[in-house]
Image (spheres, rainbow, N blue to C red):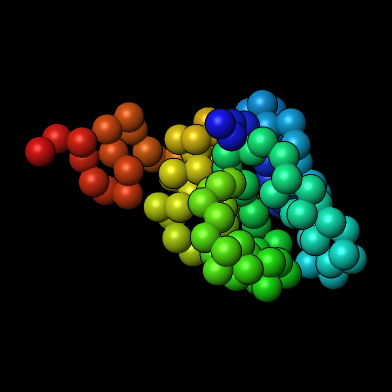
Length: 124
């Protein structure tokens, strides 16, 4: 069974993920060597990680590899992309629940409560 979380993100988010206990973090920002990121991705696919968190830039740089993963029907690791500034808050909230920190870089205060994700309450 795969467990654990790995991430390829920018330096600011990497620090927060490290503080949250994610130990396998690759720092990568747009403009850096894509081959470094691709080698990291292939190594993580072989290891026992259940969740892979990618920044939007990393996801775009790994577009072909992510497509191949999907075509091959590989379910794990589950790959989650952190949206860029001002994008999908729901994804950020789900990541916060998984690792205990908000990957948002805009300094926005976190308004999520235990029973609320993206405005949907657990109450039925």
